[in-house]
Image 1: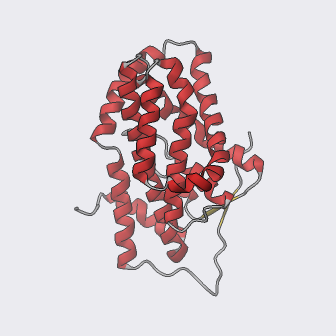
Image 2 (image 1 turned 60 degrees about the horizontal axis):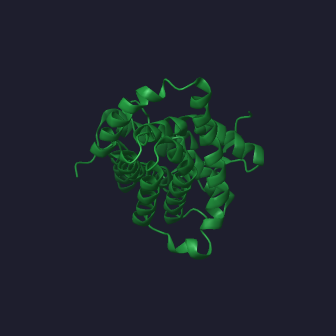
Amino acid sequence: MDEPEIMMKEINPADPPVPLTEAAKDEIAALALRQRRANGVLMRGINYVGGQVEDGLRMLPAGARGQIDEMARVALRQSFDAAHKSSKGIGRGIGSDRVHKILATLSGALGGLGGLPTALAELPVATTVIFRAVHHVAVTYGEDPDAEATRMECLAVFGAGGPSDDDDGVNTAFIGARLSLSGAAVNGLIGKVAPRFAAVLSQKLASQAVPILGAAAGAGTNYAFVDYYVAMAHVHFGLRKIARIHGEVAVSDYFHKVLAEGKLPQT
C-alpha cells in the first residue's frame, strides 16, 4: 500500500514565522504536560485488567488476531467518511467532549453485554464516536470543519497509538504538514495509523471479552479511550495552531525539548 504523500507547508519569505515568544513557549509546555497526563490512573488500570484477558486472546488463531487489524482499517475508513455527514444537521448538536464521552460509554456498555461477539460488532460505533470527538477538537482550534484535510489530520491523531508507557504520543511529523487529498493518500494514511489503533482495540476487546462483566469494562474503556484521544487531539491541533504563527520546526523542536528535559509546568 502506498504511503501518503506528505508535503510541508511552504513558508512565504516575505512573511516568515514569528520567533517563539515566552507566551508561545508556555502554551507548548502546557500541551506537553497534557500529553504526559493523558495516560492517567484510570488508563493504567484498564491496561492492567485488559492485559490479563488479552493473554487469552493471544491463544486465538492468527486469522482472528489479524481480523482486528482489518477491522481497525475498516472502522477508520468508515469514520473518515461518516465524520463530515455526522457534523451536519442533528450532528451539530453533538459538540462537546462530555457528550462524546457519554455516547462512547453507552456504546461500550452495550457492546460488552454479549462478550467478544458484541464487542466486535460495537467497534465501528466506538471508532466513529472517537473520530467525531477528535474532529470537534480540531474545529475548536480553527481547522475548517468541512475540509477533507481536517479529517486527514484527525486520522493522524489516531497515529498517536495507545495510552501505554512505551508510546511516544503525538507524531509531530504531521504538525504543520499539508497532506495530499487523493483517495490513495487517505488509504495510505489509514494503513499507516491502523496498526497502532488496532493495538488499542485489542486492549478494549480484551476487557470486554467476558459477557455481562464486559459491559462495565466496555463502558470504562470507551470513556477512557475518548478521554485519551481527545487529549491527543488537543495536543495535535494546539501545536498546529501555534505552528501557523511560529513555524512547525520551532514548535516541534521546543515541544520535544520540553518533553525530553521534563520541564513541565507545575499545575
